[in-house]
Figure (cartoon, rainbow, N blue to C red):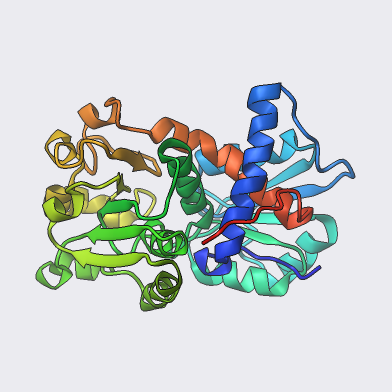
Length: 336
């Protein structure tokens, strides 16, 4: 069996998306409807989770998910900076040799996407990107899975994404939406007018992600649109999505938080914006910073589906891990 690596949504084919959904649905239905936890990993299979930066949802969902499926988990963390157990001081090739000799699957969260790419290329076992500066594929797969559960379909739905274009979530959203025939609209500032954002490397999505999204959109009928107008983006949307404007574990962004907020404030998800899309579900990959990208009132609004979105990380990632190690569980035929 060829090794499968999830570095970004580039690594997830259109067929993969539906395969992961099918397997995740089977496992979730077993657990929630029948009270049964299927154990796929009974032969002492081990997941290594590698953390260069902190995590809540990603760590809890991956580690409890793999254990619930019968496997073992070892956690390697490298934060705060200069912690005694930093493994990233070693050459990536040496790390890969150790991990693949003792583990069956690796999930890594890193600052640089280059680290993910190097680690994946050096190992002969599957690697899942648990978030890098460029991509967050399991989050976007979870988002699609959650929308499908609540809306009953994906094709033809309009997603209005409010916020920064270069964010890992936004970039992988482009490909995710294009893979399933959704109409994706990014509402973001005109970066040419804001030197601060340029200095912090904020900007439009990486061209490689845009190109792949357009390629898939040609197959599925999806559309990809960029605008500076949040009102036009939100109007009649089926999904309104936002992400943190500031990475608080990046000192340069944390120091300029209030200035960044002022620039992005027109793109805040608030009750006025929600009036433009009365049937939209509101989503956020979290952590949420109330008063910045989303208001307190929206987080408690009936249209806000952040809680089931977060819980589905647990279920969707189970499907991904099973398919990587025991492919074929969720054989699924989908007419695109």
